[in-house]
Image 1 (cartoon, rainbow, N blue to C red):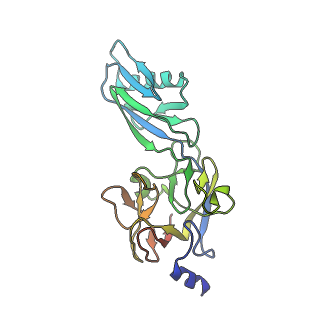
Image 2 (spheres, rainbow, N blue to C red):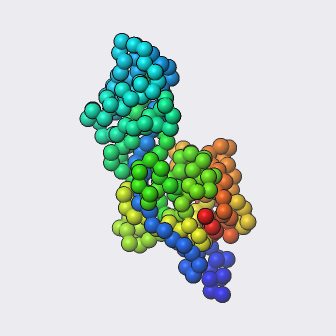
Image 3 (tube, helix red, strand yellow):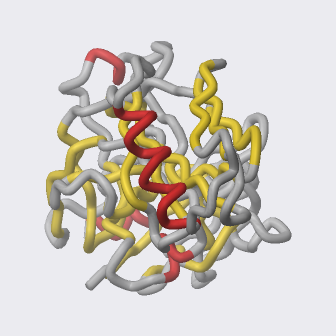
Length: 259
């Protein structure tokens, strides 16, 4: 009975459990290393990627080289350099990944010549409480997670891991502190099944299907919850619903039942 009273009031902090009697919590590491994907746009051409102002140029003479060969040359050049990144093969033969060496450290990569660069995982030194985190597929470690930056990371049933749970065990959790949440490479408690308080971006109603932000502008937070797609910046989270209503910026109870 007391649980139902608290549930109806929706007075918790973001990330606080709304029902401690019936939940599943797993542990994941904050693996938010920045990851960019480079795409080669033409074969047989000189190609340059610039990282933190340092240019890495291959095939200067524009000899006959396939896109896959250009990728291999760029990977070797970048990994032999001194920038704080590691390069590896990408999602296709014409693509490669550039990943930060250190969690929470940003870098700037530009496709200067014959290539383009797109963010895949954004740099996040701290993951807040009460936001969605997703499986990190690029670190090679099973128990790492990061904030979503692609719609497929939210809508694909096996990729969303759950909602970060509030804890007072961290110094950052003190009221009034900045960067409140889980620091880079720390262990995070993540709710996969159960009810949890979350702060919502816009007005939501009990029974609404939650949308999760994967593209954030100024003042917006990746992994936060709302009631619509915000044009094309948020996607529906499967196996979940709002249990209580709340106004924009308010606190609502979210129920998740992720597989």
